[in-house]
Length: 443
Image 1 (tube, helix red, strand yellow):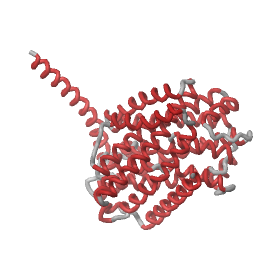
Image 2 (cartoon, rainbow, N blue to C red; image 1 turned 60 degrees about the vertical axis):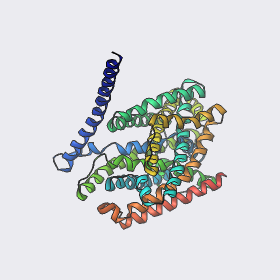
Image 3 (cartoon, rainbow, N blue to C red; image 1 turned 120 degrees about the vertical axis):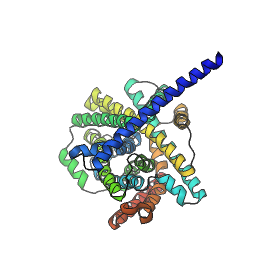
Image 4 (cartoon, helix red, strand yellow; image 1 turned 90 degrees about the vertical axis):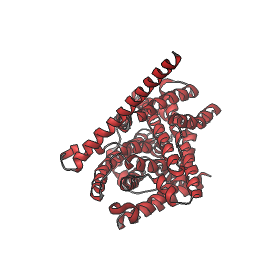
């Protein structure tokens, strides 16, 4: 009798698991069918883009995480609109970097860490895995603390309970991953839209000087060493190593090209996704600085703490503006923390060919931020410090990316063109140099 009950329970569990896998496969199959219709020429117009939209928005979440809030608000309050050109330029760089990562996955069917494991000695792969895990922990620190700080600012919930609520919410978002890539892409894109709306409202309420905005975007300028430091911080907070690893994973098997021509067509269509997502991320980052310039710099306020920013938003532009700022911080922290967890899974599987349960990984990466919150450390200072740690990992992602995408045997018809190689290596050198400067000045 007990054996029959156990057998029935096992069959029920198997049926439930199968149903869940079928839902995931159905999502993938629908996208693949739609994509093949595009590749064969059956689908025309803007509808051609739909099957290819999504991966870049997941990667783009890393570009609007809470670490960006601290650097952009500080830059706007200290120098007004002057450093807008740094954000504009950083996002142009991000378009190239993320397109190279996406192209690597499309051309090879493998992600950046997997190729590094195949081509580098084992010791190098283990080192790259360890440093990338440390970078992801630092990323998660900024995102987790940012989300908890958002709850604290909006609802007055103390940081520790807010952190525990953030933990529960991040597990809920991670559940989307189990339901298929389309569910995850839709969920993350929805959260990005919410952040965009929050900052659009803040810009409207701040009433910035649009002439000064245009001047700041297109006139490169510095005022002393501190402005260079902030520019390096903005760039460091924009180019995220884990987003480079992740994007190659998001495109490696999502839509598979059957030949060189199809792979080129897939990349051209994915490029629209990348440009669109980076425009959105760049607009959010610029909005942060514009709001700080229009409200804080105009009134002679230098704001370096996010809780101070919240208070001044309320005083200068009203409670609704302050709440929208807190909501943007909360949503950005939650969405980017889930992306960090996915990146951790990619680097472990890629560099050392091991995998652990995503929920266990999420639980492990929560420990450092919870410990810091319990210790009572200043939240904004923790965010800024995490960006310094991130800067150490940029070279270890960018240099292999340029090496691999410039290899014709590996990339085939999608190998980097000469101009792409020059621009890519120049960007890598600039990003690495500025981040070394940031680290040296920070210590």
